[in-house]
Image (tube, rainbow, N blue to C red):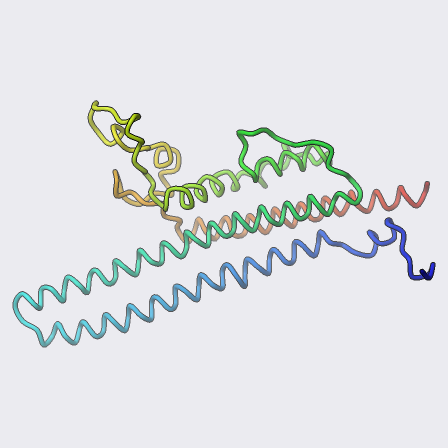
Length: 251
């Protein structure tokens, strides 16, 4: 192999900022794939609902009696269906942010093996995947995670809401198993109210009809916070990578 074409590990690391690339790919995926798909879905639903509603309006004008009442009910149901479908799309986009965030952090942890090998498991079994990765950021790279706690706060509800949507189909108060049901009276007899009690701001409805609902404001906040967190981590890891390169050249 031509010696001029061969790069030493430090030289190769110096020229390629994979952390920045991962951060840029993450941001691209959030905007184009996740947000783009969500907005396109909402637009398609709105157009379909509007067309159907206009058709019903014309029929309502011509109809009479019970049939007219039926059409009026169907008109209201169409708008309710649209709201429910939009909620589903936003919930799924919220889940996608959490999944893509975990993937981005894992990729950066693997890339960092070039200058800071992973020597153990970090965090503990009770932590979510996102928090375990954040714990690794502190222990493995010496980044002050306590001083940057504001960069992780959003990820706790993100993870919990994501799990509720994925594992309980979006039910905010899923039914308890038979052996856990009681006869004391009230929803707590037969429903698991832990999620709706902890995150009432993410719940629409009550009792067995309660559903997980991510609002547009909540979605936007997590969207922006996820991008900021990945950018922060990419910059911090790059600093440590370049310190390694500099140290290697002096040895």
